Image (cartoon, rainbow, N blue to C red; front, top):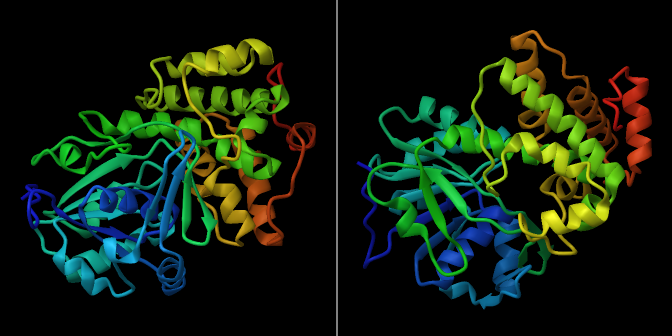
Length: 353
């Protein structure tokens, strides 16, 4: 188990639940000649059939793939051909996808979770006992532009859990690198800390570059990250920065720097496309449920277990849930709007918000 061997030198890969991340990753693999099947919704399949699959990114990538470069299916029976299954569904659909994998995929297939949050791989393992299930972390953002185009707006390499078979090496292709790591949990917790900004970006309605360029929003980012770091330390949870060599503990300090200084420092840490936005913004705009319970919600639950407070993360989570209920898209709030709401909810000002 764990040795993925498909036709030729590349494994047969099924992207299970191909949305923004799944279509981009699967498309990049197909671009390099991998045997790829996208398991996706009928509407997505129709869009790609009509338009082809176009992959673009912040660095100038512009690749157009005809639909005959890969397979598409709305039937989970396509999992039967998989050597590697890349799970890219939202967290709430993990159990359903695990059941489909169990019913259709061969037990020797390697299952890799490329999902947000820190619990999805464990959920998959519970439902797939004896399978080779690996946790993973995708550092970059992908926006589904429409017309079959998927745009990667931020930089970074995928990291997956170490194991047999050199899966990271098999999945690495030009412009999409996959590394294996011995402590994937720490990497995932570090990514969760960074992903706390997804909610702020969704509330702002701004492109990520514009939002992070605003010191008011950065102070909010710093405040919720400082609070989350305290929760992780209280719960004795290890974490590390998955996208830069800067220790996570220094990131709030960097975020609070004057904008001109911040831009100089940030330029060495991360590349961001001027039009990139968070997946949570996209969820609100398309009327989909968000993953707030896997991000701020996870910090709040952990805080309760560790008997510490997390009012800023709780307040942000509540705001996102209210916007979800309204179903009117991103609310386009200002940082001052959010700051005022948090103070109304008795969240501490933290000296910076």
